[in-house]
Amino acid sequence: MTENNITEDLRNMASELGVDFISITNKSCFEDSDYTGNKPQDVMENLQSVIILGVSVPRGAFETLPKGRGEYTNTLMAATTTLRVIAFKLAKLIEKEGYMATIAPSEGSEYGYWYANRETLKADLSFKYAAYRAGVGNFGMNHLLITKDFGPKVRMAAILTDAPLDTEEKTDLPFINDACSECMKCIEVCPVDALTSEGVIHREKCAEYMFNVLGGLRCGLCIKVCPLNNF
Image (cartoon, rainbow, N blue to C red):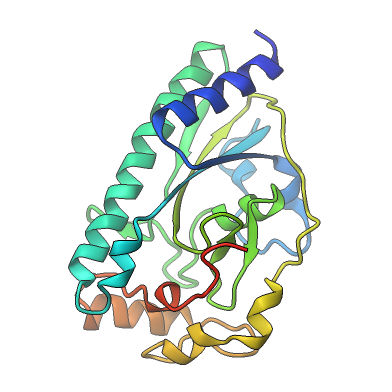
């Protein structure tokens, strides 16, 4: 089967399994100077493509905040689990065609494991940056991906593969969403001042609040107040 056919089959299967968007980027985008995260090619030596899968999160999970943080967190984890199952099935399809595939971790901490860097609190791989490079959306002042169709209310997963898939490189969007310069609602609502108008995020404040104050429940207020449900 050709790379074109593999890509088409992956897209079709992803759609059938319930993803709301799928984007594919080439390994080269992680060599750009504006990318400061870890490089997936350091994990998979023969990496060719990174597949990003995304689902929108039900609006009700956000509308119940802050009282419904348990429900909100449970809904997020359900979305993450759903994506992992879908990513696993797609990885199996890729390997059936003779290539290798593995699933990148998609949570800073979950199931007793700590995936993020303990010093920087950054994830192993920025799904948001890969999705941005594929034209799915751009960044908000809350440092989250603002997707064109669902705003920041999404969850994502990533597959690393040595399959040379058809990729998308659409960097016509500005890095920061234009609407953010006159909004700042996410900055104002943050209970621990983890976000600044200069575009800085104090991850340690966010983590301290989430784990020590909320007991591991997710906060979500900077997503709830974002007016960009779509562009």
